[in-house]
Length: 83
Image 1 (cartoon, rainbow, N blue to C red):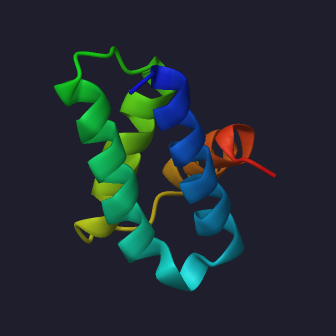
Image 2 (image 1 turned 180 degrees about the vertical axis):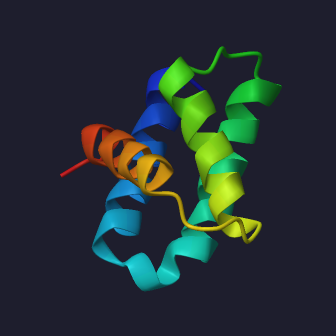
């Protein structure tokens, strides 16, 4: 599967995450799966997606809310969302 296809799938998940924040944890798991698929295919992850993965993981392991991390997450998801 082409990187562009996976990137489009991620974009749809980002859109859902922005539109339905109450499902954030479930969507995080789906985003993590897509990123792992890209890695499994040997596709390099863009730096913003690498950082997004780290930020999402930190958010869901119970770290204290971090305004800078939240801003970075929202910015990346908004930029990559499919609307």
